[in-house]
Image 1: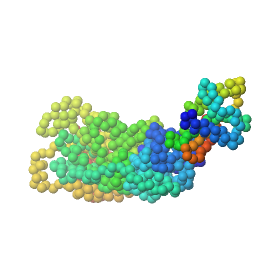
Image 2: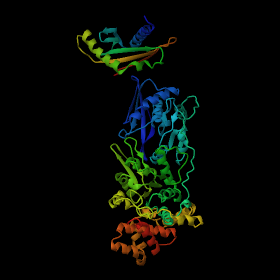
Image 3: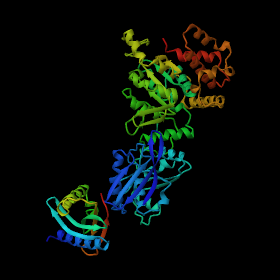
Image 4: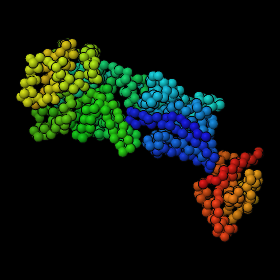
Length: 510
Length: 119
């Protein structure tokens, strides 16, 4: 007797539907699990046997063979337990084979027969739905997460017996306390208001520009200038995620093992410490490939504080995602892909002692020390950062001005400007695959349809001629200028916008 | 005779009866040699059948079949060699190993299960 059901093998964000086949033979009792399981999955035999016995529907004393197909796909983890148990008991005749054949079962069994919640339910269901499957059985503990996926039929179960009854087995229901994940108390995310920033109006404006155009940003300045404070206020300036982005961000959060209560609609921020390894930053792991900080920051902000303190190799691992918008992790037995379209914010001191360029304390670093320090941010990486800006310490006059109630930007005002500017950009880019100015290749802005008057581009044309600006730098200035024009609701950048854009890019190069 | 040996004995008697009923011809029972014992030797058509009988009063310690470990099966195959040596002067013929598992509750009727050709 053979019975079949389905489960999902997750590899990164993508998943493959796995067929779980069970065969029962009249032979010396045994349990064989074939189809490239790893150690945790091989333990499923013992978990399934114990769970079935303790839930009052013991496995038959016969030879059981369970095959996970496609056999070539490496499978890991404990999330096939429920599918295996259901397939075996159906092969034994407890449940009709047709009842389970097209149902995807997800969940780990505990020894008492209850179903444990698992990580990655959301991406698993999304992957199976993409493959054309619509009926799912998931642990009760993952109910909130599973319900986020539209257009599928979700059944939540708390035990193996419960599952069998749902499939039509003639068993008496035995209510049990479902296993749930601890739900963290909702911590109100208080990233602070932009109005808290004293002084540095240029930096605040640059932050708004970065948010409006999706530009990567480098802030260079002495300790205490407020770089970190500024960076943490960036996500609040970004517009809400669209439904597609929400699903991606929520899936990644699910893969990272964070309990979910609902769809994440605000852009995330990740700020890994500078001792992070490349695997921690982009993702890694030998069996289960987990998303790193850069993937978890997808559609949000990746903030690298003290960027030159990161090992160069770690920073350069970001070049691929910055280039392609996807993170690919290659391992001997598999390749996993994660979304990698994040907004990069780098903060750095100008030199190891941090004082270079300040007016109050003299720098104690040697010239070569200074050069080496910033050279750790490699050229190809900095090439992708449109906005490079110097942040200075707050002066006493700025504090005094602030006390007198000088105009300052609040997060709410800045966000409405950002949303308006993005709407203008989206309108302009509606016929293209891009959404923000930062994604647009320079050639598109230089095309005849959008070419600016020579009088407008004169400053950057001159810089290009003199060699102080490369062609790539030229394109970046153009991109930022368009964002500035969007913020001003201008139909095209003016000479003033270009001057500003040039300033926002060149203020570091010194 | 200790109760457990007595149960084993009763089980073997029942198994012999069951095998005869299933069309096998008994050759001998409890054949012993220094390497161990074969519970029942029978013939099914032209094939020699070595039968291991396992009897338990309940499945509390597992089904009788679960007590037939790979090691025990290996020993039965070795015993086959000795049996041919002693009884047939070393002329080997095709043979198979069968297992009879009996659950015989203290108060109640026995349940006999017969597996043919286990390996």
